[in-house]
Length: 113
Length: 112
Image (cartoon, rainbow over all chains, first blue to last red; front, side):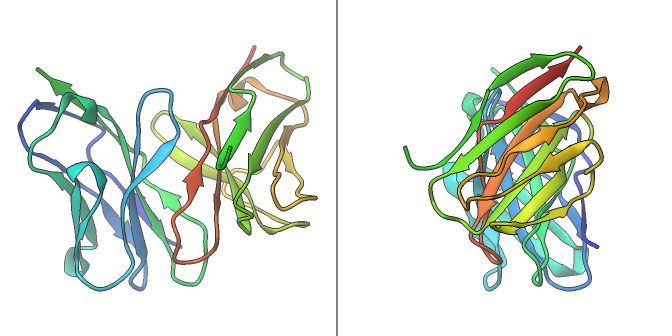
């Protein structure tokens, strides 16, 4: 069975600084990988996804993520954060032979002025 | 409106009562899911459905019942609510493998 680990529960970053959120997965083959964002009181919105091909994936809101098979990681990055990026971020993995997603516990991002 | 909608958005109920959370999607997606979100646990899958009249248990199904008589609806029922079921519940849908899931706005349920 697949699983996802997000090692950082909470990250505080200054506005304009760079952000990196870590995600490690456990799965026997190459999985499908997703990053979702949840703003306070809202549902989850897809930021980006990786299915195959180029290991650097571009998403919405200026986010990108890099799939590293050797490290079983799919870290999310943004070069310069905005106050509106304060939210909770979830990494998710989906197996290639199924349609259910497994989610990490989430990382809460606080942006300070 | 197109999309996936959950109702109610907020619900307070008493221990032992039955409560049903509604989920409706307009895309005719085959697959639908119910997750609960709790601090420190992220999202955990309760039940899922591959099509009308096909449902299956997820990670934490105890105390919940689902049905799917129509493709667009996937209600979740707590047969006898307990305080441990206080949570935020999310419904999601997707068209199948290799596609992302789309989420509703969530239902915040409090059991007192």
